[in-house]
Image (cartoon, rainbow, N blue to C red; front, side):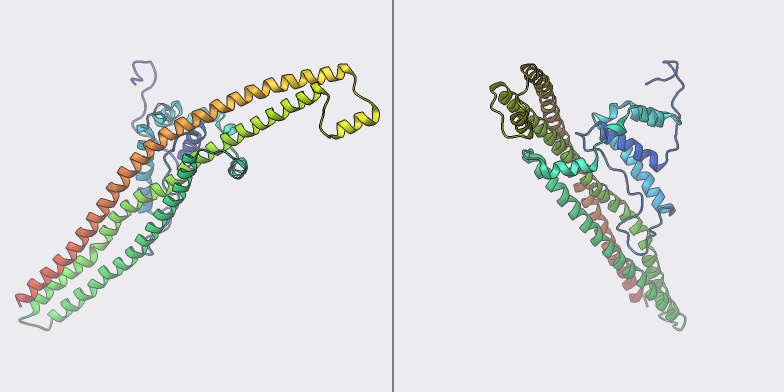
Length: 361
């Protein structure tokens, strides 16, 4: 959009944003688009780290990785067919100040579902869509498997770091040994240099590995985004069931009142003790029930439409997410495997070079 042509100030080339501002943007998107698997934010504090890596959330390397993660979040949102058209996103990307006020003016916080209501709906809903039940179960499994993979990767990184660094001992020994040898000295010293270079290379290797770990973490957090869509379905379905149940109860009351055959109630006992209610009172009650039934029917109709729309839209977005996930994780795992192969080849090459050094002695 050409801001200058429309008489507005052009958008700045760059903006400063705090992590909390990204959290606000995402919270707004989750509430406004409950049928979308909203991309997750990167971790605020480092998780699944191997012991030599700093867990400090102000560590420069971690801050840089988080910046890349936040940039990836924006790219995900901006490439989404629905989220990309949101006006608040546009304000977030183009206005240095004032965008928060625009967010709060939407009143999205009042529309947010309470965790207690969502939890209650999970246990009390009766007729949930089986596809959403399966997807919710899948999200639990996805989170479990990715967290186990990340823990295994952290343990391997710890051991790998030790294996590489211990090659520095080879380098030290070969270099010291070369000082007392004449014929063998050059070969030993060269082999020592190869070992030292190999030991030092692990820092860059594991830094690159963190990039692939962050890609896995993204889908670890995507699991919760997937569950949020499923919980919204449970809540809308539960509200529909409650509205339908209330409508049935009101119609039953109307029928009993019209026929005079009311079930046992304290009001019925009162009527028997103190006399029947006047015809005018009965008519007033019937009229009130008719109004409540009309309101109930409208509420059921609205809830039915809301539930059907959520199911339809959410399932489309879940299918989109599945395709994205399969593509991303396949690519990440292949690249991770290629990196491991390259690392192994580097070890073979180091010892091959050392062998050549020993042959020249």
